[in-house]
Image (cartoon, rainbow, N blue to C red; front, side, top):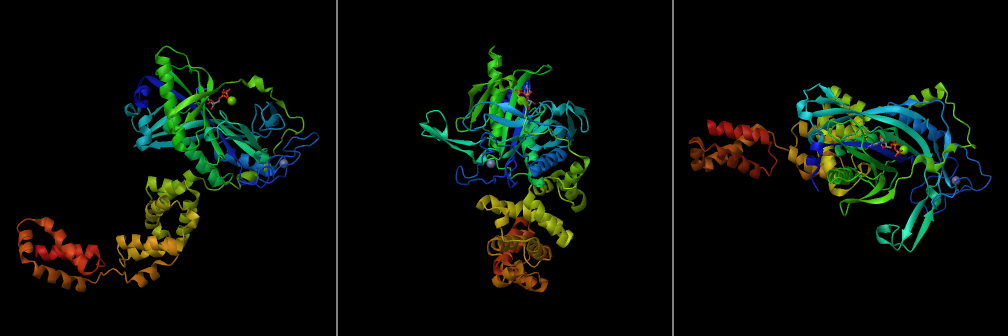
Length: 520
Ligand code: ADP
Ligand code: ZN
Ligand code: MG
């Protein structure tokens, strides 16, 4: 098979995503009062309504409607005041009602969009970027200094309910083929789910991944879900087709399932682009079907040939009245909209002088952003050193230990204390890293760790000067060699001073003094 880069020379990929998000932060299910709890004992959170018993009537969860409206406002959608629920009929053992309650042609949220900032390596997958000037636009993108901004349309966000969970026993990897029997857990039945559908506006696997990342950070910021791709509370299906560069008409698409991480989403789409190109280039046709991405084997396989919407016999749900959302309801939800990640990022750059990548890293992660915002309240003048600590030390510690942010034993004031010791020259940068490593696990203050270890950096010029003089006097041959042009020897003298002071001398002061004495 050809490589992605090569395929994208001749073919343009057209990608649209369908993203399901469980509203895990709600207390109860969509149409009944059963609790929502991940990992509970199977079939303990069920009732006649979510099991679809005869005569049971659904009652909509108001908090779930608030959540979807919030999601719509955060993604620039129009909120439809009038919408209703439909029945999507199908038989499968994971749903005892034999229909899923979902929405029809009009969803709560319609016609939204998100702007994706694509830069660095992610921008390389976009074809023809080099021929655009900064500020120039083409299709849905505008060229920037180091990449481009792509505007991606959101068709709709509708409300539906989740089905139960099937556990296949006896096969490989819990898959149905080869299984001897299956178990069903109905706890997930009726958990509110929102489905966001994008326009086919994405053109590269990198854009698809960035869209998903951006959406996840927004949904986390507005607090509607824990958005766990591993646990399945956020799931993404990728629709993809190819067309020859320069042509307008869409090709036949396939739909990819099981992309349960950002990497899988990217790699699955990249594989599928190459597979489709191979089929088309050898004169074949793409079959409209659903395919399963197998990360271990690095391939996609056919799951089922696509059914059409007609097969589901969608009709209005007779047990639920149509909605008529009031302006007051929508305004109340709008008032709950927090500052969104891209707004935070813009603020960190404009008001605190952070770089784009640092500010994005902090703003996109709820825990980092909360910490940083608190730190700004304690002492905004320390914004940059605190940001540095977050994106370097904190991120490295979390990566290395797998700890979550909340487990770290540091608070904003404590981290600022450490940054001040470094900024004031009491300890060096290197010592700062050691102190940090100790702080996060012990929870002690930087000051007391520095005190206990006798770590103070020596900045006293007189004291350092005395040591420099001694070392210079003890090494006349090296001094002569330095003065004869071997200036690299300054490193030897600096190293000696650092050793004599057990690493506690202020490197800047040592450096200046050594050079001054050697030159003099
Ligand atoms: P279906 O009826 O098969 O569910 P939809 O029109 O509802 O298809 O679109 C589902 C998703 O597929 C949307 O995200 C849409 O943007 C995307 N999509 C539609 N047509 C194509 C295509 N030809 N190539 C790639 N993606 C597409
Ligand atoms: Zn129930
Ligand atoms: Mg569809």
